Image (cartoon, rainbow, N blue to C red; front, side, top):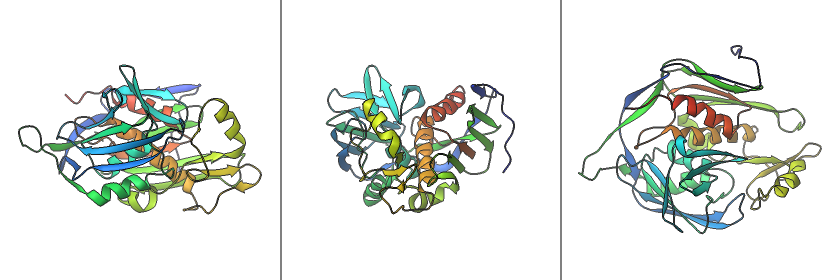
Length: 312
């Protein structure tokens, strides 16, 4: 696989005057057919929280609601703030973090409009470290057409990439090419951790439920103490994360897939790119996306470039 030469330097950004065109998908906006309720522990806070997913009106999009203060935080790129090891949304002093797995499932399952109520804290439950629990719960209740306050449906639009665009930082990058459908290719490289090494995976969204959603997060054993000293991963355990040692390999096998770490990075990417959605429209750009050694902050940088183009 050959990639274009990027501008050199610590951080280079490429954008075009009009890389996105919003176009009809031929579908109508959907919401949940019934309430969903799941509880668990937050990865970083260690707090026990409950999330209720509630049906919502067409055009409302996906919005987090913190039960403590009734604060509302729309799941859009404008509310994203850079934090280590997770995706965090913040609006008017209210914060919700570790939203990426839930948003990944909602985007893939085409739950376009949804109120996400968090009780007991400000972090989404981490469940088993994948999006499997969310996908199964959504599948159990199903989806249905969403209607606005006048009883009307709304057509679902999608952002279609019409020109190549990329962001890069060092040797990490995300590049997107125009394509007739969504296809995502993801690569990671951990040369100091032989059990992980260099991995690649490539999927269309049709494969999400079977090939992507159950891929769990992972961490390097030798880095755990440092992360905890920074107040992170208080709720992390071998029950919700794969742990790999640079010398001993995987400490809690078996893996669900040979390249499960790479697939999980792709799961995260889908969740973060869903933040391009608004007003019940699709978030993932229709394009062939290639991400290499990319993390949450680079995902957000990529969306901020695309977000310069208004839907109006």
